[in-house]
Image 1 (cartoon, helix red, strand yellow):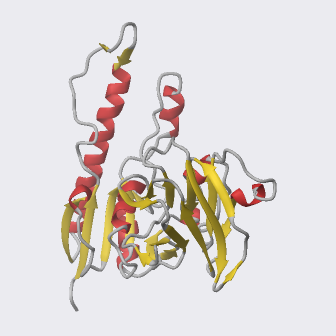
Image 2: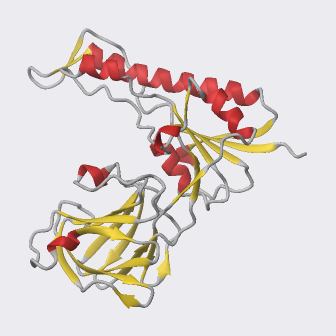
Image 3: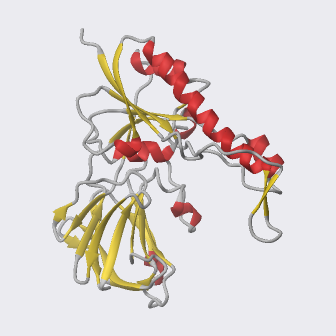
Length: 317
C-alpha cells in the first residue's frame, strides 16, 4: 500500500517579528505602547512556532510522505496529495482553498487559539484576541488525536459550499469559501450596479438598481464573519444557500428595500450588471481579486466544487 502524501501549509513565522522589550515605548506625545502589548505580540509568534514544531514532530512519527510550504509561497494548484494540513488560522485554510478543487480534504490547525481569560484581563488596555480558528478542527492540544482519527478513517470531512463567479460568461479560476465583495477599488466610494436573481432560465426578481458601497455574498461558512457583522443572518455550516447583502445603500425604491438582503438557492444565480467605471471582486478578503468595468455582467452562484474540510464538532450540532 502506497504511503499517504501530506502537504503541511504554514502561516509565516514573521507575522509579529521579535523586538526588544522595554517598560514602555514612546510613540506620539503622551501615547505609549505598554510592554504588556509587546509581550503579547511576541508570545503569539512563540506559540505559533511551538505549534508548528509540535505538528511536524507528530507527522514525522507517522508513516507519511510529507512536504512543508509557507502559505505565501503557494502559487499553483494543490494536486497529488491525500491530505492538506494548514497550521495558522482560518486565513491559512482559506489560502489553501483557493488552490484546491475539492478532491483533497483539508485539516485546519489553529496554532494560536484565543484565551478568554487573557482577553478579559487585558480588555481595558488592548484587544488580546488571538487567531480565529472557526473552521479548524485541531489545536496543538488535540492535533495528534485528530490526525490519527483522520488517518484511520474515524473522522470524515464535511463538504462546504463555495461561491462561483463568471464575468461576462467566463468562469474565473478561484472559488470563495467565505465570501466575495463586489465594490469600487476604494471600497468607501459609491458604486452603481443592478442585479436580479435568476432561476435556471426564468427571472425570479425584478431588476434592482443600487447606489451603495458594494455588494457582499457569503456562504454558510462565511455567514458568521463580515456578513454577520453587517447585520446578516448566521447560517448552519451545512446549508448550501448563499446569502447576499447590499452594503450601505444610499437610496432605494420602497419596492426594492426588502431585496437589499436575501438568499440565493443552489438552483439560482445572481446576475449583477456593473455601471461604475471601475470595480473589483474580492475573494475571502483582499488577497484574491478580479477587476470589473462599466458594462460587465457578473454571475454569482454556488455552482462550484465543494471543499472537503474536517470541521470541529461544535459546528456540526
